[in-house]
Each structure stands twice: as C-alpha cells, then as structure tokens.
Length: 448
Image 1 (spheres, rainbow, N blue to C red):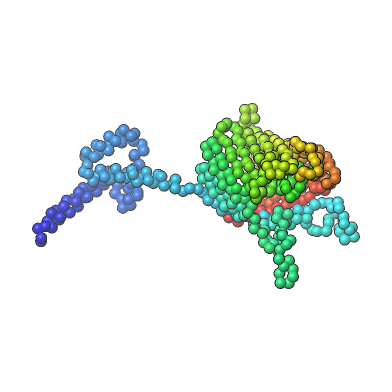
Image 2: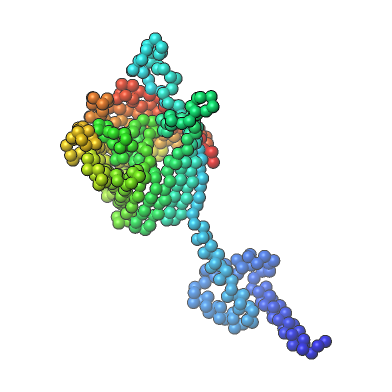
C-alpha cells in the first residue's frame, strides 16, 4: 500500500467512528426510527414548550456534553421547521369553479289586451308561456385574505333564449334561406377586489343591485325613473319582476372601512361609454350594529349622472337617494329559523333643471318618483326553505307614455331545495300596474 494513502485511510476511519458516536447519542435521546420526518417531529415537539432562555441554556449544555456532530443535528432541525411553517404562505388563494344551469318560465294571467278573441283563448293568450328560457353559468372565484376575484360567463342556447339576452335579428341566414339562430356567450361579470386594512379597491364589471330581501322590487339606487326614460342613453330602467336584477355595469370603486367599526363607504365611478364622456357617481353607506339598532342593517345610497355634462351640455342630470333596512323580528321559533322585516324607499330622478325640448329629457317632467317597499322574509328549518312577501307603493308610476297611475303591486316568492343539486323557486307577482298577475318558476341545478 502506498504510504501517501495512509493519512486518508486514518481520517476516514475517524470519520466513521464520529458518525457512529453521533447516532448513539441520538438514539439515547429519542426512539429509533427509519423515517427522518417522524424523527424530527418527535425531537422538535418539546421545543415550543420551553422558554427561550431555557432553550439556549439547554442547547449550550448539550453542546458541551456531546461531540460536534451532535450539535449540528440539534441546530439544523429547527431551521427545517421554520421553512415548513412559511410554506403555506406561498398558496396565494383558494380557487373555485362553480357551474350551474337555470330554466325559467313565466305566464301572465289574465290577458287584458286581446287581439282577436276568435283566435285567442279567453284569458290565456296566444302563447302557452310568455317567457321560457334557459342558460348555463360558469364562474371562476378566487379568494385569499386580502383579495377576491370573479369571472362569470353566461351561455344561452340559440333555440332556448328569453328576455335576459335577445337574439340578434341581423344574423346570417343558412343555405336554406332561413335565419341562423346562434348560441350566445355573455361575459356577465369580471372583477377584481383588493381588500386592505383601511382602503378597498374594486375594478371591473359587476351587478350593482343592492337589495335587503326583496325578490321582485327594490334596488332603487341603481334604477332610472319611469318618465323621461330614454333606452338609448339609460340601460337601467326600473327593473321589477320575478328574481329580477339590474344590468351589470363597468365601474371603478374605492371603499373605506375601519374608519368606524359600524360604517363602511363605497364610492364608484360607473360608465359604459367608449370614450368616457358619460358616467355616474355612486356612493353607498352600510351601517351595522349601531347603538340601539344592533340587529338592524341599514343602507343609504346616492347616485347621479354628474359626468354626463362634461361633453354633452344638454344632458339631463338627475339625482337618486335610496334608504333601505333589514331587521330580524323572530329567531329560532319551532320550525321557523328566522323572520326578517325589510323595507326600502327612494327619491328617483330628482331633477335640478327644468325640462326643455332640446335637452335629452325632451322637455319631460322634472318630477321624481317616490316608491316605497316593505316585506317579510321567512326562513324555515323544514318544509319550505324561504317565503318572501312584499308590496310596493308608487304614487307616480308611468303606465303608458301618456299616463301615470298610483298603484300598489305585490309579490310572493317561495324557495325549496329539492336535494343537494336542485333548487326550485316559485313566484306570483303583479303585472301591468296591478291589472294582471303572473306565475313564474325557476329551476336551478348545481353541476359541481
């Protein structure tokens, strides 16, 4: 054997003996195991229970009584634990992809406008149903501690559409000369919302409908008054009807929270104009757990098309103020889970200018609408899941372009969860300014 290799062999033998001593020391401290993660977990268990000063003292004592390799084992393992504790922070958000479908039917009874009594069954009309449509919904939801995001896609089959999205009548014809009925894909909502400790910011397109339990009326802060309404300039005509909501809008919203533990404020700039020449200012206060009103939720909203006159000096600037509330009356009484009272009132379309013919209101009335809504929301443990009874009074509703009426309209809404996949919603509501009423039903099915 070459003499130059002897020192190497001697060092190797010493290293083997050193590792063996270290293993014997570890075996004497904890039970033997063939799995490194389990052994480190057992060795680390007592560490959190030991005060910091005592830990340092124990570490120095162990370092003195054991060889250097043993000290390395004790020092390195806590570092591995710290890296493991930080690992979950790399998971940015929880992502969910819910999908469902909806089918809705509605029938107005009786029919007050008869075209030809000989060809139309009295009280039934020319069609079996006034509306009959279906759609599929696909959403992507992302949520973390400080962020929420959503993309909502609606899909309407070409042969199965209705009021929500009409078919384009200018579509091409097929080779047989008949008009092609195309499927419709609608980007209903797409927004991102960052929630800071004091300031929130939300940008995108979303449904702004603010209601306190109503399924037919309400949401007045985002509606337009009935008279002086021009469809080409205002998209949110006063929606009402079975499970109605307002059209989503493009907005940039800033929110203030934690400046008061009971109050939050959202201020949004809303516009659908391609050149940003027109737009609304929307402000909404939410009040919760106020002194003396701990169980009541209150919302106060303001909206105005203030930015319409930046480039269009003939714009009809109006203001809307809405106040709504919801409060529990009864909780946990037999099968009754809760009974809530809700209400809403608004001044819609307060006009600070007198109408003239060359302005966008075409010289119409400057009077505002003053609707009042009230209702009861019942939730049950058994049987039906929910019953909502509501009524709306409007002293100045536009029935036709040439007339106005004072009327009270009502609605009854019922919800029943059939199983873990299907939910049935049924409703009866006033139609045509209380002259008629309608039946409506919607079946919702969850796919995933």
